Length: 477
Image 1 (cartoon, one colour):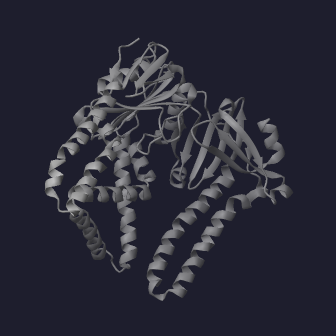
Image 2 (cartoon, rainbow, N blue to C red):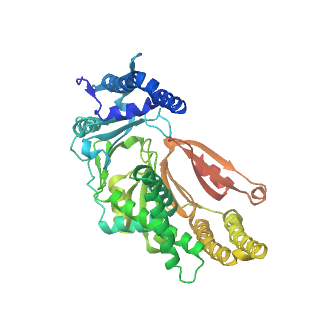
């Protein structure tokens, strides 16, 4: 068994935040002293304020001192608690994912954030999250690989290093404007708290003046919306590119090893046998261009928004199939043997057609009832039609290519979700529930929707629409 290790001393700052509620006592005392203009009385009791601050620091230091971890060949032990000691035991065989992140704001302190996840953890929080020194974090990660697997590649596999062009394409095509807008808003808000309200006000005023000068005849509000989405896309592009830069994927022993990132470096160790499924994902653009991206589902992997989630980013078919076969030789997608029934076309087109007709109708109502908003409503209505049409085209592709296939105990599910086409390859033992769902009209056509729920954190449902019911029962038996 290893000797006990302690968390990084920077943990003390996090512990201080947990007891920050105690500072309300000196704040209240100072508030009432100011109301009564009783400076002398406040100074006389200042010793109590100092005592409370010292108590906060003492609690934070003591919590850090009592937090230790150690391990042996079978188990990881974590001991914590001040008044009541608690010891958590996590068997190595139950650990699915170990994540090590080196955020840029922790690098000056030489600290790394480590997450350990098992099937017993929650969807939002890891079983263990701890700040360690880079050396201790690397030692824990190396031990998680197993003594026989450290530094060795699994037989028949190599190291996959995506080209910069693949990462660039992923960044261009998959940048999320809305998520980046939330990031920008958070940045402006936090900058206002740190640098003063005038700084955040200056950023907002500068943006408003820029959009007015670059409106080019477009209503200022519409121009502001368009430029906000463009700036959000640009920020998302930069964040995605920096996250996947220097990425490498390899199989080491019974684990999948992923590293990547520049400003914030990330490293993951995923138990290979605990991967729930692989997801070959395409947008309409990458579908037309013949490009593929590969994602996986595993407990603890991709849990945070800033995690690396895509294993094979935007490759052509030949390179994609080559690296997919190297990394996942037992999860090979099969040709569709049970396609969507031609009788079930409404299952695919009803929802997007409602949106495609609903947006123009809503735009017409707004322009009729609110004359001053005509230009803005027409611009926003035109912008809103773009995702509606893309959604309709995705459903048309789904109708033509979706369905099921089976090779032994390996199932291939082809379907669309939102704007993306998915090809999911999953083993039978990772499927926890199969449901054949029929709507009222589907009963007359003999079709059904096949809903397959797979193992993992939270609810993961795969829906293949308008499948012949009798053939589905036979295939899934």
